[in-house]
Length: 329
Image 1 (cartoon, rainbow, N blue to C red):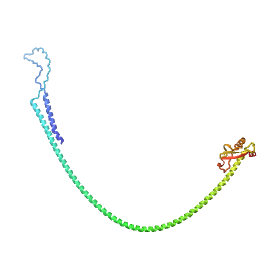
Image 2: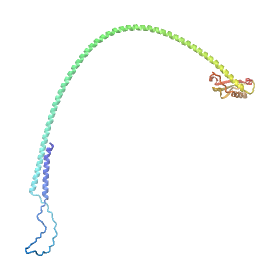
Image 3: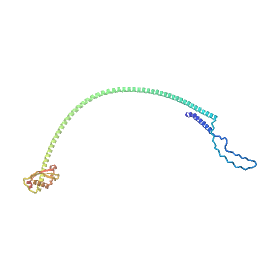
Image 4: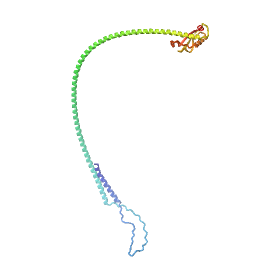
């Protein structure tokens, strides 16, 4: 449709271009009238050739003036005006035809749109009616289904009520029997519990008496063992002290007044070797005697401890030495 509207406009533009080209060509065409070059005539006689006179010198050529283009004639101007008017009329006609076709197309489009809208409205109305019909059918089916469900629920409720009543009656009978059986069982259990508790109390009392007796016996045995061990430790300590004194007596090599005595304290390792320096914890009043006792103790070491005596009991030893025993040792 758009191509048809363009053809008159293209035709008018082409016609105007042709007219303008014709006018331009008519204004610039040059037609020469006569030649301005000199012409020499030769006379030929019948009597024979004559002496040819010397040629005259040719005149210098004159500059050729280009004539100005002739002005278009009245006929040409009228033809151009007529062609221009014709082109304008053709263009106006083309515009009018295009406007008419556009109006027709617009009217046709409006009519088509109107028809399309009417068809769409009819389709929508038909679809709405169908939807309303379907909705009504669905609501009716829903109502029927709801009525059926209600009737089924009512029947189920009645049946459940009957079953509940029967179950309640059976449960009541069963509960009465269970209550009686539970009471009898409770009584029996109470009796058994009482007997079991009595037996358990008697057993617990017997166990307590046995445990007390065993504990007393164990304590007595432990006390006896401790007393026996203490006596043994005292015996071993006495033997160890006597052994130390004997070794010191054997290492004594001087004489002092029999009235002198001192107490020496020494620390021993597990093998009976002296740790550090023995010291006097109770002096004799005679420094020379005290130093002689310390020297004799150091010379007599080490002191082998007796077997079975705990190291804690001989780790630190305090012994009293008197000059009389040392002199006669």
